Amino acid sequence: MPLKSYVPYTQESHFPIENLPYGVFSTQDDPTHRIGVAIGNKILDLKNTTNVFNHPLYELFQQSSLHSLMASSKSTWTQARKSIQSYLSIEKADNFNKGVFWNQNEVNMHLPVSISNYTDFFSCYHHAYNCGTIMTPQKPLADNWKHMPIGYNGRSSSVIISGTPITRPKGQYLKNGKLHFGPTEMLDYELEMAFFVGGTLNSLSESIPTSRASDYIFGMVMLNDWSARDIQLRESIPLGPFLSKSFATSISPWVVTMEALEDFKVDNLKQEPMPMKYLQHDNKYNFNINLNASVCLNGSMHRICDTNYNNLYWTPLQQIAHHTINGCNLQPGDLLSSGTISGPNDKECGCLFERTRGGQRVINLENDELLFFNDGDEVILSGYCQGDGYRIGFGTCSGKILPAKL
Image (cartoon, rainbow, N blue to C red; front, side, top):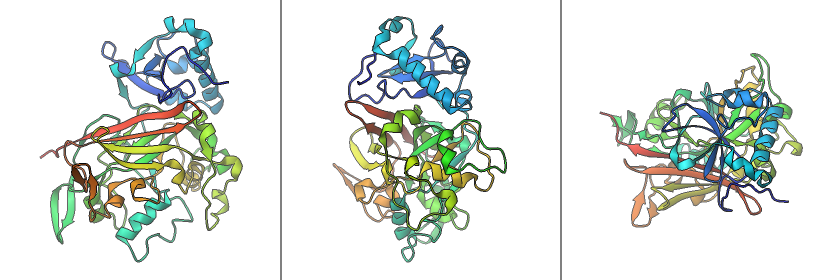
């Protein structure tokens, strides 16, 4: 029997009662950061909806971020979801007048947690191969790529909430064989999905096996890992991206729980060769997701990407197992991202660098052409899982590009 809520919404809404993602918001009259849950086009204010939640949920919902909730346990996350779902169900229609609800378009959204660490993986075969054919055509895929999830430690201080403007970064790059310094001329996006880790995590020198990794995934967001490709090409050898990535990383404001995504899990991609034992997990732990993701430029005027999360080669369980196999200790609120998600076709390329073959092939848009982004452009990521008569959505992750600071 389908779930129903007394809060109205359409079948196209990203936030039905089957979803109930968490976010942190404030209002014009009250700048206090507080936890809310999205339902339709409303937000249930968990801090100010009193006499509903018992200990420990009441205390967790009084916080100004999701850190304490993330740091609790999977059983607490389940209890919280069931309690909120019950409160919002159509059988409890009287609660509409008891709870505190806000219109989503009338609030300010904030980072859901203070992010201490941010790791960006490189988990999509099509993206890795496409970039390899551009940069090292004689050997598109590195020898290690199919043996372990490749990643790097990103800059957590420049992770920003959707809607925050993106100032064009400056740096060194080669142009026509000569070294230049100035604003990047190859500003790009990367369509990614990321997850927040939580629970009582491993201490230093302890590893988390794939069989237990799902207990430490709190929920997912969309992520745009903005990239300055000309700066990246100049600086990446031998240590990889630095200034070309650290200027901004946008995330969507609503954290969709793994329980909301459970019905959309699909078989993992076949991995050949078989990875080492510490990276293996059987079908009981399938963690690929049938999640439609798209990118639009300047509103809905130009749709420049349509792809699916199920194109990922390495799963979040394998990412956690590999991240901790050396004894690295994760912390509640750490953000781990998939890397660019691309499919086998041009329209499925999750960044402009792939789609334009490194800036050598123009993308034809209606009455326009595109290589890389111009000042004033707005890039909007969106994603959802399609259920029977409902969607589990992530809303949008957007950023408008401002000119470089002189």
